[in-house]
Amino acid sequence: MKITDAKVIICSPGRNFVTLKVFTDQGVYGLGDATLNGMEKAVATYLEDYCIPALIGRDPRNIEDIWNYFYRGVYWRRGAVSMTALSAIDIALWDIKGKMLNTPIYNLLGGRSREKVLVYAHANGRTIEETIEKTGKECAAGFKAIRIQCGVPGIDSVYGVPRDNKAYEPAKRGVAPEERWDTSKYLNFIPSVFEKIRDVYGDDLHLLHDVHHRCTPIEAARLAKELEPYHLFWLEDPVSGELQEGLRHIRQHSTTPIAIGEVFNSVYDYTTLITEQLIDYIRMPLVHGGGITHLLKVAAIASVYHINTGFHGATDLSPVNLAAALHFNTAINNFGIQEYMPHHEIVCEVFKTHYIFENGFMSIDNSPGTGVDIDEKAAARYPYVMARLPVNRKSDGTMFNW
Ligand code: KDG
Ligand code: MG
Image (cartoon, rainbow, N blue to C red; front, top):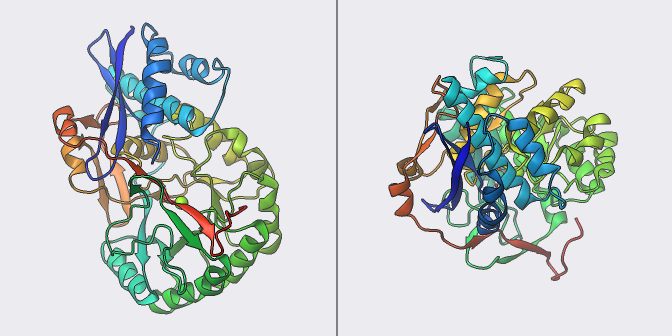
């Protein structure tokens, strides 16, 4: 069996997605997600100019070897752009394998470990009142776990909290906008949000919060400690995590569970965090972390240290990634939770999926491979739109040293 060709499809049904389609001489093709928010064209170029020429002619069944060829065989290893490209190749190859064997991917990963996959929703309010209201809407939709984000008095623009009450979308059209951030205002305010949410919704609802890396280790330790009474499911990305030892401060001061790594792309970003048990959840998603092949290894190492997965799953990761993640989450033992933000409805014109959300959980059917297909004609109706994630400065204009 041989790979005969591959192509990159960029489309923007509401937001940009990059999809890799790998063709074989058996008429079967595979799809991989290659979306890296704000850097879509860099991944597309890396795939088109560097990876696809080297992919053609290989046997798609040899996923482990192909993974190592594109990871270890490349002189300049790692990095978000090349690991996203490698992830897309890897997911497409697992899709092909599933289709060739006429079986869903979870079956290739050891079969079912669970009936359904716990997911969490987002409640992003500009004020505490709005956050309470949005939390109520997600509870009514059936979610058992909700990520709570809130505007902060005195800060004009809080990352991820839409000012216009629209759907979550941190990327803005055109060149990256610059925003101002004040960590002390944020730290003084956020515990009061969780106090109110617990008052209104009680103790059963799982609550999560994302710091988006906007603290130093000691600031994050203070936040984790002050949020302890509200029993969070997790505190996400409390620091950037590039300095893995920095997470020791948080652990020394608090029992709030920590999730980290939606911007990581290799097991080597995690080694100290896992082996010293400084975290509780792995955020690195399939689409940016080297695909199923690499995350299987990361999850296996994490499981030895009682650390679970909690993959990133915002709307800037395509339905191809979500489907692959659901297979992965269905199969592995140390699954924790999956982030789920439903895509804009026009995304369904382009991507045809086989997963459902019901009463706080998601499940995927027995369609072979990932179970996702792409309608290329529909994709062509939504051309690429330049959009970038914002840059943050302190209120006096200084760049942060997070
Ligand atoms: O592209 C950036 C988004 O994916 C990010 O802002 C979402 O932090 C995020 C999350 O946890 O979903
Ligand atoms: Mg996040």
